[in-house]
Length: 513
Image (cartoon, rainbow, N blue to C red):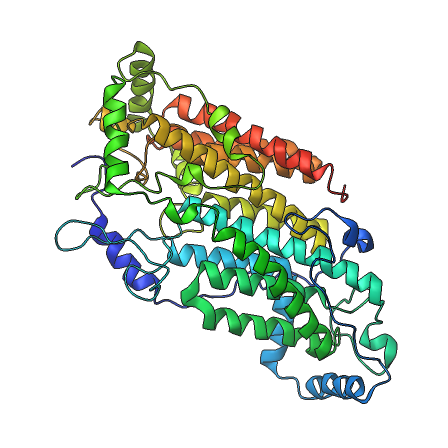
C-alpha cells in the first residue's frame, strides 16, 4: 500500500456523516464592532466588477415623517420590549461584525463540503453535480481550488455591494432611527453616519445570493442566517425595516453580476474528461518524465486538472501561461534524486516540533482548506484593528482574490508538469499527513501562503514579519510531511508572492489606502 492514503472508504463514511451535520456558530466571545474609522468616502473607492457605484439603483427612502416610517419605529420599540435571551445571544453574535460572521459561515460550509466522494461499486468515482446537489456525492466538493474561488467571489461581491451602499448612504443622507426618535435605544455600537441603505443588510444580501449559488443545498440554512442578520439590525435599534430591505435588495443585485461572471469563468469545466486525464499522463511520458499517478485505491481521477484555465480577478489568463514557472528537476536528474532523498530523510526523522507544524497547517479533508486558514488568521487580526465593515470587505476581497488567482496559477503548473509525489517516486517514503490527489509541483500551500502573507503585510505592516514567518512555516510543513519536494515549496512561495504583489498594486490604487 502506497503511503497512508488508501482511505477512500473512510472518506466516503465521513462524507455521509459530515453532510448531515449541523453548522455551528463560533467565536461568540468577539466584542461588538466599533470601527476606529467610519470610511465615509468608500462610495468613491474602486469596485471589482461594478462599472460605477450607481450601476444598480437604490430606491428613494420613505420620508421619516410618513406614517409607514413611524410604524417601523414602533416595530423597533416592540421588538426591544419583548426581547428574549435568545435574542440577546443573537444580537451579541451579529454585533461582532457582519462581514466577519458571513466569512465564518462560509468557512463552515467549505469544511462541511470538503470531502472527496466515495467510489462506486465498479471502482469509478462519481462527480458532484450542481444540477442535483442533494444527491450523493453532494455538491460541491469544496476542495482548495473551489474554496479559494468561493472565498473570492463572496468577499468581492460584498465589497462591491458596500461601495454602492456607501454611495447611496451619502446621497440620501438618511438619519439613523435614534436621531429621528430619541426614545429609540441603540443596543449595540451604531456608526454615526447615515442609515439608508443598511450596510449590514447589503453585506447579508450579497453573501446570501453568492453562497446560494456556491452551496445550493444550503439555501434554507442561508435564508435562516439572512433573516437573523437583518432582524438584529431592527432589534438593535440600528435600522428600520425599510432600510434593511433596501440593503438586501441592493446586495442581491450586485451579487447578480458576480453570479453571471461565475457561471462563465470556466471553473465548471475544470474536472476535465478521461481523455484529458490520459493525455496529461502520455504527454509526461513523451517528455521522458515519470508521470504523476493517483496513489489511492482504486485510483481517483486528478483533482480539477483544468482549473488553471479558470478566469481569475488579478492575473490575466494569458499571464498564467506566460508566467508559468520553469520545469521542476527532471525525474531522471541528480537534482531530483537529491530532493527525493531529502524528503525521505524528513519522513524518517520526524520531531515533535515538525509534527506540530505538519498538523497545524494540514488543512485537509473536512477542514476549511488552506485559503480558509488564512481567512481565519486575517479575521483575528482585523477584529483587533477595528476596521469598518467596508474596509473589512475590501481587505478580505483583496486577500481572497489573491488566493483564488494563486490557485489558478498553481493548478496550471501542476498539470503542465504532472510531477509525481515523493511517495510515488520512492515507496520507502511514508507521508506524515494526508496525500492530496494531484501532482506535486508547485505546492498549493506554499502558493496560497505566499499570496496571503504578501497582501496581509500590506494591510497590516506591523505584522509583516509574522505573516511571512507563518507563510514560511506553512510552506515547509509540506516538506516536513513528506508530500512535497523542496523545489515545490520554494517555487510555490515565490509564485504566491508575485500574485500577492498584484493584489497590493490594486490596493494602492483603489482609493482606500
